Image (tube, rainbow over all chains, first blue to last red; front, side):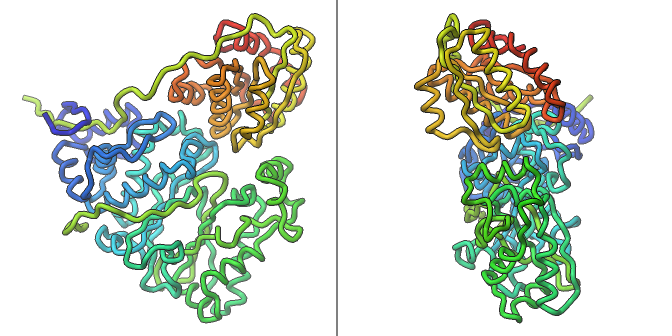
Length: 355
Length: 181
């Protein structure tokens, strides 16, 4: 007896063979996995000070029970360290809130996938990359957080690509998309503080995004920089345009944040500027897209005669990430489903760090 | 001698929820009010026109009530209540994308639970999803009617032809043999 609620199966002590077994059953994301032996799952659970039997909820559409134990098994497969597990668990808790609409995100033909933003002390404990290359490759915590979530969505929710997951093309962020805010080099208060948390709290925010678009300008002129930002967002083809309540994310690099802050743009003023200037004319929308936006209510269709890409400046989520070595920022679209939810990370096990 | 290791399974285990039967079916639609929920796809507008004519001319419906949703949401509670009060049966459609398949099914399930027989329409590309979703809702044999995919991009005449071809399936779903076309 393993002491676990999950069934135990006996497989050959051959990582490649076990990987092929899970791949053939549709239990992976297409990449090789770390075999979830009893020993490895036991070790994973040392990273969280919560009951493994606790259910976070049922993962749609197949409604598998997301116990912490099941999440830990998938986290092992993803290659997580134990220190990362509380972040993964909290991210899933965000996504299992009814208003996140995971039941629509899972089967959609859109490219939507969960993007995780990490704030607070857990970034250091779990070695979440917040500086250079935070959105890219090379950082185990960032990549495995997103991967563990994807495996849980597959194995507990049934969202196998090409089957229940009907995403027309997908997008690379559906493989894994997680990063930490560079609070230390940001010119603004931390993102999670702007969402009502204390600075010393560890917080996870999850948004369903369908793209990441580079916003690049090496200018040091704030007026020019704002023009580049709004130019990049003024796009009638985005998911944001068809959803007046969307929560797009502007991942600003530290240098851009400093240029803007030095010119008197705190986060709120930046949000309002973006909101006011990133609008498209009604005739730029296809009839189908205009219909989708109008379904939310005619009162949300136009603002001052133009279609804004979300209806409230506060919906535009601004966080700082990346390094000081360049001037590249990123914009991530959100629309229809998976609007941002933030939760405090609980159960961080004392003394457990990524190593 | 081969060596084995104990591995914990990552997938969901155990059954979920109650299993319910769909609502009872009427013997005929003659003199009945029939509802149609149109989720905004152009192809669904064409289908509504075809089915409205068929429901009245061939099945003797006294009236066809059409409710509109966006495709990215379920119908409003007020619209559902109105259909439940007035209609002997309701056609819901069309699941022609992933998320709208979810909403079509949810609307159909809510009506079935209120005792209203439904025929929910999906394009074939979303049949697997519709079956999986119905299973998770716990309604055994929720009737579904399949139309060709792609459908929305076809000329209107082709959509009409597909709608006419679906009539037997719609009738079976609303009246009796709960077998999808």
